[in-house]
Every structure is written in structure tokens, then in C-alpha cells.
Image: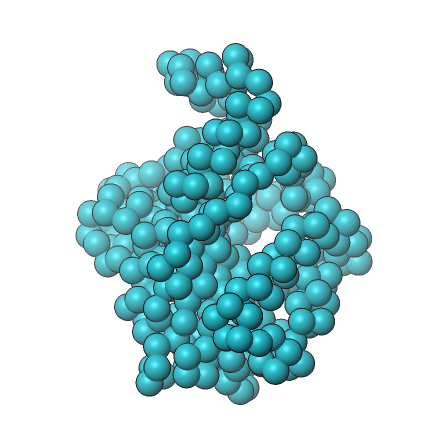
Amino acid sequence: MLRAYSLTNSKELSQRLNDKSFFSLERQLAAEFVRQNAVPVSTNVAKPCPLCDSDNTVLFAVIDNVSYLRCCDCWSIFIPACQEIIEEYRNYSPIIALRSSDEYQDIARMKRERIWQELCFWLQFRTARYSGSNKELSVIDIGNRYEGLREQIQSLFNSYCPCDTINDAKYKADIVLFFTQIQYCTEPITEFIKISDKINSNGLLYLSARVGNGFDVLTLKSATDTIFPYEHALLPSVDGLYIALEKSGFEVLEIISPGSLDLRYVMENMDALSDDNLLLRYLYEKLDEQTLLEFQSFLQKANLSSHARIVARKREGGG
């Protein structure tokens, strides 16, 4: 398995991908759904890790009155909720209406264009590396809500099928794309097995995720403004993803963590951190931008960025 990285630059560090007003509205709508489906907060919640199945889990944070647990073995973070409540959230009509609006899509296209181009280059290059071609392969794209990204991916392959869920895919394909979708899974191994059933033998799975072992996630905990229920029901760790994919009949070929915004998220929320967090306060007050960029590069190299990408191959004979 290859652990690779690509360094960031100052422009990436200074820009958020989400439009501030739309992201604030998304959070408001999510909080509204949580209030309508309130569950009691408990510090004694006990549930095994959905990735490594360890019983060694503890309370990590309470965000918007919803408990998040952390697995002490693989470091994944998750809400101890049933899949039904997550599906209700995903089908919440105010959020669907917002994200499907022309203005939302246009702003996403404007702010994410360069990131999408880089993602498509990575996808094209890795497919050529592991499969030897691009155009002759068929692709299922699960849950991709961005029209602009779908257009760019479709231009790379002859056969392209976007689906809301893997259950909507009618045929098998050579490649399945599962970008930022595992965050909605309370039973990820079950989901990976379903995905495996839709991939041709020796086909590829491309996965991206916000990860629980990321620097900003572990630092900010409940002070984060980028993680919220039920948009983020599962924040798998890199190790947790590896374990779950191997259990599901995949060989993990490559893991990278190219995230570039960890430090920015932390710096924007310094007021919410305790005064005795001296290392972060020193970083914030004393270090110049170039040194902070070097720190972000270290996070990428060590797979400690809170965004990860994985390439996995379905094992021959599986599914």
C-alpha cells in the first residue's frame, strides 16, 4: 500500500471551499432537523466502533446536543445512531432544495473548480496506473451532488452513471466513486460489501472522507464549526478505513491526505480553545505563513489532515 502526499500552497491555505452564507444556512437547517428529532444526550453511551468493531469507545464531544463517540483503538469518531435517522436527514426536503438550487450549484462550481480539476487529474492518473486505461471503463458515481464535478468526471469515461445510493445502480461497473459519502454511514462495512457487489472483479473503488484522526477534528472537538450532526455521522480514521475495506473484500492500494485547511479551521476557532493550549497559541501568535504551511505539509505527510483519499481494488473472485 502506498502512502503518498502532495504539498499545499498559500492560496489553498487561505481559502475555504464552502460559501459562508450557504454553509451557515446548511448548518441552520441541519440544527433544525436535529431539534425536530431530538434524542437525550448521554455520557454513558456505549456502542462498538462501526469500522474495527472495538468495544473500547468513549465520549468524544457533544455537538448540537448530539453525542459523538471515539474509538480508542482505531481513532474513528461516530454518532451512535441508527441508519434510519441518517436517511431521514439526507431526505430532509429543505436541505435537498437548498443544495439543488441553481445559485448553490453555481457558487460551488466557482469556488471548487480548481479542486475538482485536481481531483479529476488524480482520478485519471490513478486509473491509468492501476487499470491501464480510462475511456474504456465504466463508472458508478455515488451521491455526488455537484453538477460541475459530475460534468468533469463524465468527460473522462465512456460510461458514466451517477446514482444517489449504491442500491440505485442497476449494473456492475469497473469503477465506483464514493466521494464524501461514508460520513452518512452507520454500518460502513455493510455499505462497502454492497459497493463490492457492484464492481467488476479487480475493479477499483475511489473513496474520499473527512477523517476522525485529522488535526482540526481532534484539536477543536465540540468547538468545531465544520462538523455537525447528522451531516457527519461517521468520521472514520485512516486506520479504520483500512480495516473496514480489508474486511469487505478490498485491497487498499493507496492512501493520501491532501487536506490544506486544518490549520485554518483551528486558527479561526482559537477563541473557543482553552487558554492553556499553549502550543496552538504560540503557532497562532508567533509563526509566519511559510512556517504554518510547513506545518500543514507535515500533517499531509503523516496522514493527519482531516481529508483523505483512498484507492482500493476489489479482490479477484470477490462479490
